[in-house]
Amino acid sequence: MTRPHFVNIGLISFVFFLLICGIAAAAGGSTPSAVTTSSASSSTSSSSTSGSTTFQDSASLVYVTGVDYDPEVFYPDETGTITVHIANSGTSSVGLTQPDLIGQNVHVINKNAFQTMSYIGPGATMDVSFTVAVDPEQGTYYPLFSIGTKDSSSVHYPVKLVVDPTDLRASICGRPDNFATGKMDTVNLSVINPRDGPLTNVLVVADNDGNSVSPSEAFISSLNASSSAVLPFQVTPSGQESNITFHISYTNGDNKHTQDVVLPVNLGEDKMGAKPIINNIALTNEGGSYQMTGDVTNAGITDAQAMILSVDDPVHPVEPYPNYAIGTLASDDFSSFTLTFTGSDLSAVPVKIQWKDSQGNSFTTTSTVDLRTLASASFSGTRSSASGSSSGATSGGGTFTAGGGAARGGGGNFLFGGRSGGGLSAFYPVIAGGIILIIGIVLYTKRKWVLTKLKKQ
Image (tube, one colour):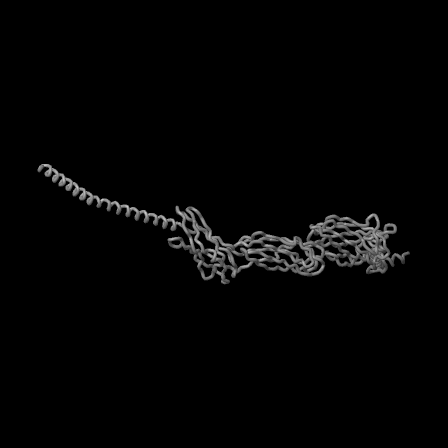
């Protein structure tokens, strides 16, 4: 009975020993668990730092790529648009907020449009447009563009802004010295843009004041910086002196500007036109009718086309030459003509000349010729010249004369009175008188010899 009691005490001691070892083992295992937790915490902190660096690098890669202006150059006190182009060269989206233009001479009108945050994706671009008003002082200014990024610093960029009061220039660069009633002339209007930016929608409208202007308006979609254009207009005066006003409107951006150019329409002689002159007139009688011949000369600067000559009241044209077609008479050239007519009063024979210019304008002028000095010589068919008086041209012609003076062969001569038929016969009395004078001189010098002969007989 004593032996079983001994075995139980040993068993209990062994179990107690194992329990103490287990507790010691459990206490030693708590140290590795604490190290593992610390390592995990360090890893998490490192990951968080890496993510923050990546975001900041993306924000720093947001930059301004360029700026657009509308208009390119402002007038003083004008409004316009300034658009800033932004790009993101990073690999993640960036939040942008509170864009602004900061400057004393520029005032942003649409600041309320930037109340929310905008995101720009990786590799993407974005535009920020400001509606601005500029001060009246001219010059070049550099307002500062600024835009903030989420959880990072702001982006800044200086913007160049030009304010220039130089205006569009317009003037008449080509016109005749004088306008003629009913004659179409070309007038050139020059439009010049001396500014550093383009002007658009240039519209010219002619206020004709009763005159005919073609075209009535002209349009230029865009007039580039430091460029010009010439606009031709065809002007035909109505018959009274007046003014033609060209109203010019154009835009600089969305801002409209206007100015006027006035063209005085003064009527007078056309210095560049054709100027027909008739001269060397001769008159013959042809069995109850008269035939008048002569020359017409173009003493003007330009050619006269489709020229036709005819007579007018109080004489009456008859065949075979009731009118005479010259055709084109060049400047400084002449042509002969023949007209046949009947009439009792030759003191006022109107010769009407009609022609056209290169643009198809029609002209008429009348020269009144006095043929009474030629009437006495008309039956002999002798050609003479006669003086003539001119009547006013109905449109732009010159003054017309029939050159000459008194009829050749008319009146008396310096030795004998009376009239002659003209030509060589007009000198017969002079020749006869000369012969008689010579004979008298010879007889006087030979008088002794003659008397001697007579005494011998």
